[in-house]
Length: 369
Image (cartoon, rainbow, N blue to C red; front, side):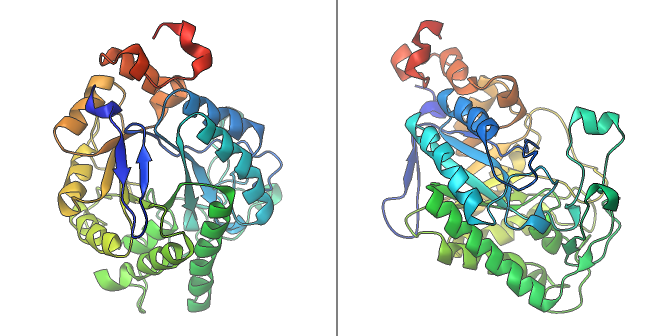
């Protein structure tokens, strides 16, 4: 059996923790499919996530689920800011579980990158790119400071009262996610969204207790982690997704991520997913597995955590190599899973697993993996 398809245990502060059937993780990917604009997930989300659970993933993450309406990336994003959304997620979670996978939700707030047009072919064809116009229903956005770095309408700088309210929003969303039955909650602190905006000196130009020094710039993230960990059951793993490096001089760098990951682990985060960039013009590397070194650096800093690598990991042998070299404990698969919802089953077959050890839905046994 390849390492990719051996079970893995995610430890927690209290209780037995969570065991995944294998080390493949469906990465959160925006679907821009809530055409009702109310944040309520529906049949598309069941079909999309359910297919990947049936296809063999060990852990299936939702798209970024906004913790407030104002925090949506687009107006067609799914959410978890009210009870109706929480109830709608519940049957989706149940189906994921029925296929042998664990269910994770990515809690998110886009901050200054909110209120943008959905990234769909029709929108692009109509040149609807960037900030949603007021006539199309765009809304005011909030961030740690005003900034033009994203090429979007500048956010308003958050007041201390808004920061405190935002922290509570994260905790409230975690409570709803628990009620919906999710096994893992992941805080989205990557890709230039709100938590990342506080972390990076490129977007956080505040001069109060939430800006300036490393301690101050990480204060909001620490408060979010602490609030979510308190609301999220102690027997369930708490995860975080980092942009490990802005790849911009003067920005958030991998040394900062390594330092803060150790602090986050002490605050109760037990799983880390390492992506990168999202703020400023990209100056980083590219190519298959280009972000694996970021995961390896965090794994070295927090050896007892479950660390996943993500980014252009498409080939099963490549994924296996990430694990056998000790760079990460698991791999997050994104675009490759959009092309093939059965990526884990196909990968297990290619890596030589016996038919009995290949994770696939019983209804598909005639596929001869």
